[in-house]
Length: 556
Image (cartoon, rainbow, N blue to C red; front, side, top):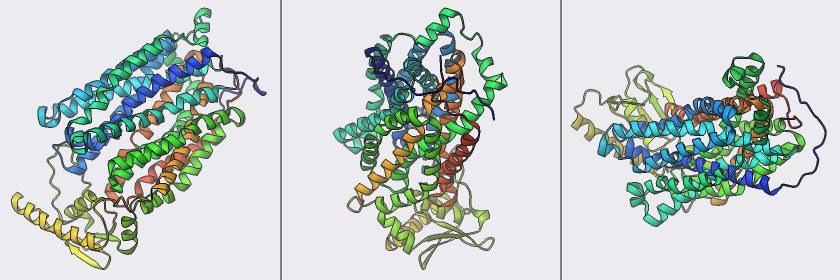
């Protein structure tokens, strides 16, 4: 596929960063850190939020709902990209991302004041999801503005280095959110924090918003935009020029499928899915899991700058494609090693006493209940719901039609029961008895209810998580410069924002939800990894074949 060709070649002249350039990088990056902090608080607190706002459904559905609400913010990011990208190309980069940060900060603070499901019923999750949508819209306009603004201030040969500072902001925002959560949890204690203290990190965003707005008000408009404005070369219809003309639309499509989609799934696997895996699957204490993730982010974050700067010398495309390929081929061994070192009891028990659900497939449902009315009472559903609740990995084996489900744990079999014809009280009695019997059998086979902190190999878990973060830095560090360079200045904000936010908002944002639903459906704790692996490999193939290298391109 043909794309816009490089307009200049050769090595870049040496250039020391001026005071004004440092101010641009610092102000843009700090404001974006705070905005990512606001956005990621929800993801870090998804399990607690599920208890407060989705209490009217069963536990598995509640957590999937919480992840869906998390994903809702990502779902609308492309629409924010369209709305604010158009404004950015018409009225300027600076004013547009001032608007987005105000929307984000206010929406986050309101979450901290929102009454729970127990207080106002179904209105609570409805309002929560609405606030998440507002956050997503704001973030849809933020990133493209910040990346474009910084790139247009960068000297030739330094765009990868300059924009890499913007790339650190997502990780630093997550890191900041984890630190604030840990500080609040430690100061208040787990019980108080989960009851009401979780609101404090959200309310803190008011302070961060005030700092961000003040800093960004000190900035000048992008020189490239001012030059276009002075010459009367601004786009009068950036949406039409970006998406209704094939020569630009084909670059938008390929930058999505051959660039941002793979970058997104590698990013969200390395940070969010890894955190959820530690918490939900390995049952590691939340404080310990957050500290491990925070440590990996602290170690890995400088690699954004390293790979961004390296992309100025060897190119953006090589590094991003290599990151996608390496990640895809190593995810399975890395996550299996996380199990081995993070919860060795589960790893050993799974090897020595594997769990197999022997059931008639017709009796097995996908246990997602959006309205809280469905009753999962077949012998298969009863068995799988208890295994899912304990995060026990299992395999499926077909049984004769109509037969009662059996749970085989090593050499032992535990029969389930059919509760479809039982009254509620009788079902509860049978279920409690079955839970006790199954729990005893699992304990005897070596399956723990929670990870034993004394058996966690902390250095190895930290190393594995750091490797995942380094993959993130490979694909994410150079992506901003690459996207900026792919599109002309007059429609740059609009054109680059849409593929970035479809990639990260849809392919990446829905990753935890899709992956955990895949795990819930199969019982295989690693099955969800097929989602990022397939997307990353697709991106590598399309990116290598159809997208150009752009590091020497003149973007003015």
